[in-house]
Image 1 (cartoon, rainbow, N blue to C red):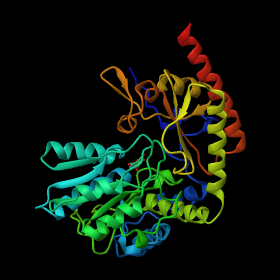
Image 2 (tube, rainbow, N blue to C red):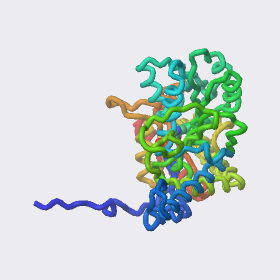
Image 3 (cartoon, rainbow, N blue to C red):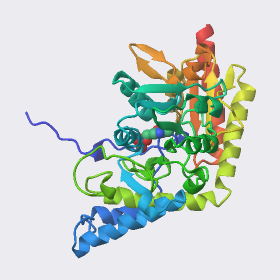
Image 4 (cartoon, protein in one colour):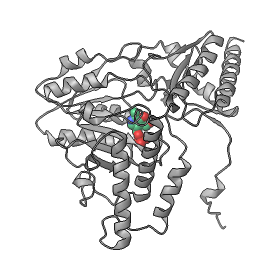
Length: 397
Ligand code: PLP
């Protein structure tokens, strides 16, 4: 019997949705696609090759490095391209521990993305002492608590800029000042902050800062780690001399070019009122839901958030049921819940914020982008209301 071999075209279906899941990933901007295309066809050179076609690829990679550096006011040489935010986070933490082999203590927070959280859990099992800084019910971090935990043995402090589930922004400048004062390297996971908030690494003074392209309308599978000039770090992959020996491996030229173009567009957007408009739409959506659904609550500090994010908890409902019903009506959102051993567990972020279980199980994240329209928000608000009211009535009947 002959098996049919499927091509990817068989599974692509045209979809028209209201996309409110931009913290998961964003649509690749048309300008980014256009910039990348030649590097998958005629510009196929290896950036390490001496010949013309290789040097054309090298030139493109270096231009992208300047564009990404410019988004955070870094020097181009301080940008190390990686396969994404997860690799940048892993490289920052493991690379620092390897560079300070006598130090066995890492300070982080209890609400980091799993790229940091799960790595630190593993390191704890391997004998590294991890201090998990608590947050309050609003998602706030206390810099004083951080200062009290730093000791002789501390190799690194790893704190995110903005939370991926709630959007809550940490007092990262205060954290950086404490680390600088105590001479401890600081790693900042800025994956959800770049392009949405102005970032100046010179002012911040962090040793390391993680970024990812696909959160800013760039391609998936490419990111970068900012590695300050005086930062001590050891490569975790072993191979060629690419990326200052910190991250060997033939560069993902097309992906890097796409990241560069996405960074250029994001830097331009930061100089406009685009995010103010997005914050206004986010607030409208939130208001529409909160004012009309008596069992809905906003999770986290609503005054100190990234402009595109709201996490809304619907008491006594399951987020998965809401997400499936929303998806059927064409609205894409997400939750931080994870299915473990048959039961749906609220995310470690909401647990750390001590959010009541009955609320945490029903927490849904809506994340907008500069592409979100008034109409999207109006329709989504109405659909969310209808869906949760229906689910709630099904529960009580
Ligand atoms: N850090 C944060 C805060 C994130 O939100 C994400 C992705 O959602 C990552 C790290 C991982 O980035 P990537 O998907 O590029 O591996």
